[in-house]
Length: 91
Image 1 (cartoon, rainbow, N blue to C red):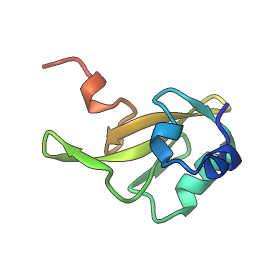
Image 2: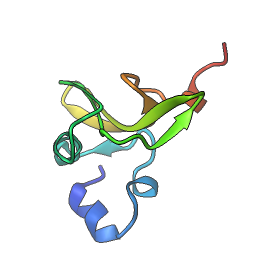
Image 3: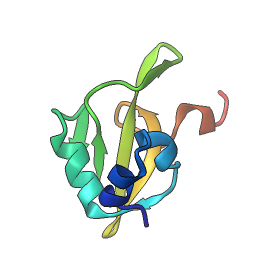
Image 4: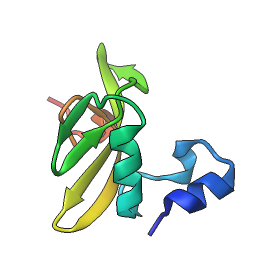
């Protein structure tokens, strides 16, 4: 499990410290919710308010999602989504 303290002590950017699918402590979700107004928020999904990049003309956001009681880093996803655009099947 990746921790907020571990990230801060690592001196790294959010990514590559976190990889898509990493389990994170709840403190990461709290941090993501409070760092700035979220781009998207519901009890099981938090997207940090500033876009990370644009894919297919749409912004992507650092995304944390919860399954049961466990939080995960979902990578950089489109608004309201929990799968990175490059991981989605082609249409």
